Every structure is written in structure tokens, then in C-alpha cells.
Amino acid sequence: MDTSKKAEMEYDEVPLDLSTKKKEDNTENIRNSKNGDKEIFFIPNLPIQSITSIPDKLLSIECELSRKLRFISFNFPVEYVYNPIDYAFQAHAMYVTRYCKTTKKILFLGMNPGPWGMSQTGVPFGEGQEQYILFEACDRALASVLKLLQVEIVLGVGRFAEKRAQTVVKTDGLPIKVLCIPHPSPRSVGNENWNQKAKLKLEEYKLMDYFLN
Image (cartoon, rainbow, N blue to C red; front, side):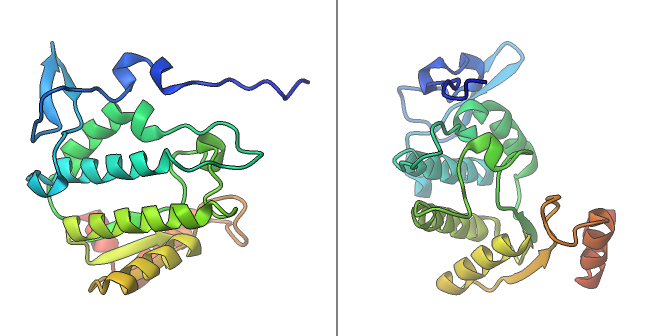
């Protein structure tokens, strides 16, 4: 089997209804247009300080992080990197504007985006010399999100996420408690019965009431 050929998708080739839409004039809101019954989302060309709503600020933080990560080059074997904030921006923006309208007491922090993690994104988050650039950019974005949402508890999914959250909380002097539940990856040691173990951890932290009520 020839593995030298890989499908490559440039940003301009992303289907229009899944890509980030561009707008010439400045606007405060990311949600600002409708195409029939379909809501279209735009990235505002404004400083985040002048944006007022929580979902719009959150999306702006994510888009700024996305722009920073575009300048990172990865060594072999990474050849192609997909950016979910580009190709899935519309679906993600719909979710954020619906469910992130208010501050949040608890924030779950995971290591890899998407159901296939590194296999989907092509980015080796936990290894390689590029990780330090990733850490710096992602740490700053995480700090901004924690402050925006006024988070009180960060629940790291796995030890890696827990350690990154601890670093950000300590660096920024945030009054936030950092806790941890096991990572659901089948590669994690002793990960049998993950659902039960995660539930027991939530009960230990006295957090189950937030999910049952």
C-alpha cells in the first residue's frame, strides 16, 4: 500500500457553509446574519475588549488562538493539520452561542479536541519540540476563558490536562480549584470501567449534584 500520498485540503477548498465567513465592515456580534432559516456567524473585526457578550468573547478568544497556531510548523511525520475552528466554525459557533451565554462554575478541560484526538488533528499535543509553542499559546487562551467564564473549578480529564490547568491557575494567580478525573482513552493504564470511575470521582468531589439537578 502506497502511504506516500495523502489527501490534502487547503483552507480555500473547505466547503463554504463550513468555513469561517468573512465580512468587510466591523461588527460587534459574531451572530449577525441569516440566510433564510440558517444563521450565519462572522468573526468580528474588533478588539476583544470592545465585545460585550460572553459567547462572542469566547469565540473571539478561540479564533485568536487559531490564528496563532497557524504559524507553527511541525516536523515529520506531521504533514497535514486540520483546524476545527476553520472547517467546523459554523457548527461550533452555534453550540457556543446557545450554551455559553452565562458564566460557568465548572469547566472540563481535555487534552485533544475531537473524538479521535491526535489522529483527527494531526497535532502531537503531548510530545515534540513544538509543544512549548502550543503550551504558551493555549495557556494564554485558557487563562482568558477562565476569567471570562468566572470558573471556580477546573476538572482536568487526565493528568496532562490537570497539570496544564494547574500551571495556568498558578501563573495567573486565579482563585480556582483544579481537580482531575481519569482520561477515557483505552490506552490509559487501569482504565477499565471508566464510566464508574469517573462517577466515583465526581461523587468524591461532591460535584454530582451539578449534573443531576
